[in-house]
Length: 196
Image (cartoon, rainbow, N blue to C red; front, side, top):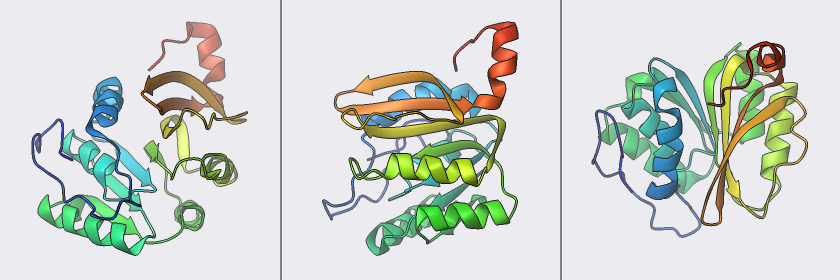
């Protein structure tokens, strides 16, 4: 488990010994960040179900301004904190050690708005739909935000009422689904969708 691009390229992250923690594989991570590389510079990122911080730290390495990590599991939090220390990222990051749905409410109350929202929940537990519903009722994004969900291919995302699916990428049994807010539909009809 390593950083693939940016100023920390090649450096290794602390990885979990507990098999219950499933970090994003380097292959999936490389595919994800190759697609969005030009959209990271100076952006504010939210890493939901952050685990060890693998995705959010990659974003910071590639030029993101700040990442807020949301994770509640004690062992994952311990590794996340170690990784942020290892990469000297405390000044560009914040950890919210809460349940994701509770954290979204907190961030909404604070008036936060993110350019990029990364979501990698435990597979096949119904958390994708539940979290998308929470994002719909507590909007912490703007019209140019990008939502990226990593999920099992056997857990399709159904009826994302307030989001446009703009791209999908399958890597083995893992799917990456890319969404933009539906507020952008007006401009898409005028200019044509250009993807990501």
